[in-house]
Image (cartoon, rainbow, N blue to C red; front, top):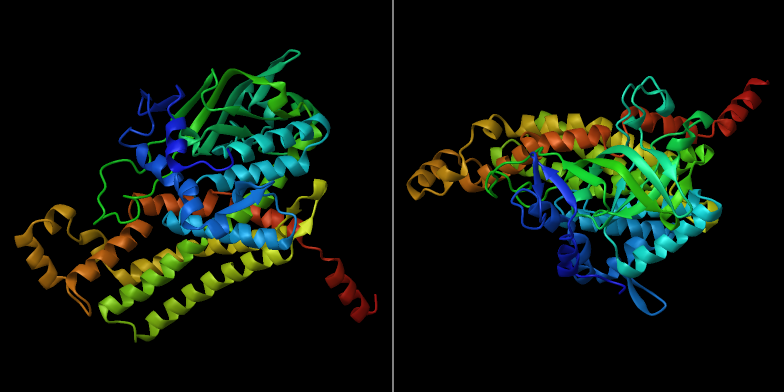
Length: 465
């Protein structure tokens, strides 16, 4: 097959999968009023084949292939991958789309598995590449009491585990949470969430199965649901992600789809291998969001006629510095890429985690600057019903005019409100803090990745030690 089209992708989602939304079973996610938007958003990773083939399409053995499925083997591969992720995010309004995450997990499997697990991973990779499969990833366990490890929980199902095994299959029970795209993916890759000890052997499991596999149920979060319109919600009316609690109720997995089978010594390395790629994805898909914040700040200052004020120049300079630092570290992560196991190259983890931490740490200040520049209009402005009434609209255009027309000022304010204040803004704030790893996880990886040897050796030499 090579490349799928949007219609192929959407049609395959109607397959009997068990999706629960607001307490009800959803039979067709492509037609459900709250879920269809997410499916259309994710379809961008298929329409980009036509809109940007120079980034999104390559050839393998004469067959057109999605570039998302090309494991990086040089720094240049990572540069192109970064540009592809940035472009599809730009099409998606600054939000991750779909294939980015699945390919992160695939590359981790190719790199960090061994023996039969690695052979299975390579066969599965070929299946995904040839059929252009839409993948989601289940990594985060629900974890229960965070002071206890997997095997120490009062309820053993609070981490996903193997409960049975025969010659051809394993059977798993438990749940993963925060599973993005699950309701509108073809298949799910499941990997460990943390390092594990010998006591956690049953929990050291990785595999892939179709979403419609018996026993698999997706409980989709309704966050940011509700009526939206493109006047008040210019971003969230067009772009939406779905996250689920993903429950495995004695799900049988064929052994040729198992990549880690009771190998606790590989659980941590596989989790970290995924993180290396996933945070590189994060800092690239955030690049359009950086542009949105800086661009909106400049336009709002101009609309309010305050561009020349000293404090405004300072705020915009801080936003530019924040944005360009993230961009520079993202570029550095690809330039410093190194070869790892099985010929797969990884981006430099020090630069990746510094970029992710700098973005996340500065996001709150950046959105505060936006709110300050925009003013109270973000929450006191008119609604779409007012705007669509010609008589009321004339009043609004008169009294909401500034250095620009009333319409332009209101639309800029609504963009900022959607991005930083309303439900979508809250969603982005949580993503900045927790998605692809928390502040503490990023700081830990920065410390792990930094080689202090040259610096300490230099000081020892100068100090005569």
